[in-house]
Length: 193
Image (cartoon, rainbow, N blue to C red; front, side, top):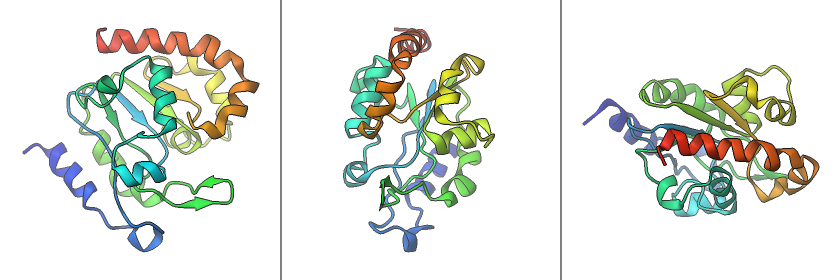
């Protein structure tokens, strides 16, 4: 059994935040040492918590559309590693889901990312993932996403694909008009499609 498989099994059994999680611990991730693209998201939502399948919700539908990939490609761990900042659903707050529990990144993230040697591109989704992967430099999601070329192609900042971001997408039409076509071309190249 590989070191990555042992680590992923440890993460799936993790109960570190159980007392803080209103719906209990159910870590969700997808990893394989052959993965080419890392999706660094926020934390599972309620539907993903119920299914145990990453991005098994409208956010996932939109993300797959942005990437120009099928569900079969997306859920192929040889192609995509899906490693959220928090592995468990944190519960709901006043304006959406609560932030990812910080214990996940502190306890697991560096160890896990070190076991993914074939990653060519990291898709960094949402503020919490941005802060971790780009540093908490007080940039907004809009500022980071609009400056995506600065990090291309190793890390690509994206807004969260949640339907809650429909207003952001309407206010920033350049994202789907300019960034998404380039992103899809790059994903096709990395995946050899």
